[in-house]
Image 1 (tube, rainbow, N blue to C red):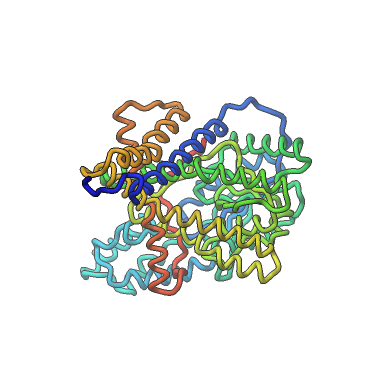
Image 2 (tube, helix red, strand yellow):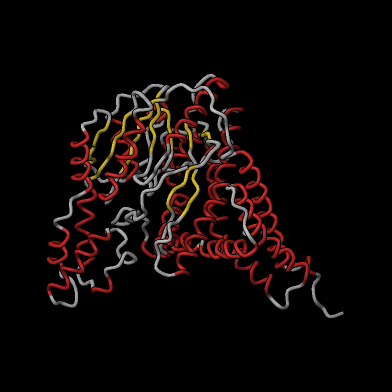
Length: 502
């Protein structure tokens, strides 16, 4: 005997087998989701729905005109609907902080990767101002003077709306210290809507819900009321992510494409199935099993429910996923629409990593949610324990995506790996990349060649290998600094071109 353990007694076998089992189950969920969503549907009867669209904006001056040009015509198809753009006084305070950060910046520092909060025009103005001074680095005064001519988002909104003269379009300027959730809540406070027949619809400034999407949403609402006797209380429009190839290098473009595809697959294999299971259980019993995870773009909340639960939580770092926790405590179903919309994805590696760190903050918010709402008498101890356990499991699964993928890749390629372990590791990688990539392309009506399959699978694999870096950074920053709050709001300036959502 050579003294080697049987393969089934080695940790590597159990790790590879566990990852393979999870990925194969995920692949099954992708197949089931694709069979249900984005399928052709004949037009059906629907009543007009009333939407109060709320768009919180921050450092997004160049997108205001495009957002108004898109949303205003949509309102005409839904009588009684309104559009509210919400600016915030935080922008002025953050601009002062940005100026202080710019002091000492050299010409090579004035790049989107270093200052994603600034627009391309602002970066160009700063570079030009620096060149005129003949100095090596910007001074505080030079940076402030260069940015002074650029209007704030609030100024641009006020100017654009004044030209429109549309009574259904309003501008609310939030004066407090809160961020997106506080902006949305401030806008809803000024709405007269509080009935069960109207919806608060939260969209990002670069969201482009098509007329067809909203019409199908109205049909979904009508069918739901016919089946259940009331309009759904909360509706989530899930998203597919896509890049536009803005990066200068091929490898960065490929990496961001792969990360966007990996995020789309997560939506199909985790987000939508989880919402469906939660909604079904919430209707069958008092309180839903699991944990609703809402997303801040394409979120429709019935006006009476929005006020009943106190609006979006503004005491957490982020608001959308925490809002799902609040809905879970009350057993409010969150219905996932049977179709998706397209949203822009990160275009640069630093933006991609920052986005992952930002999104993971939601999982770190859950203990604070439990403490706050338990103290206020919302939810039982068992309900909080179940929600926290589910959140911890999902957060841990995200943290382990990259290590698990990297480990399986090492086992699949390792020369000393035993055949059974290599087979399990290969199956895990195949179920996470090759098979779902081909399924997604087929569902979108563009079957892939062998070369295209290899390229897109490799991109997706790279995206998975990077997926856990953001969460790890979030935990590391929290451990080192003791805080998860940043001076700047956790968002970069959107540079994606306006695009139509299918």
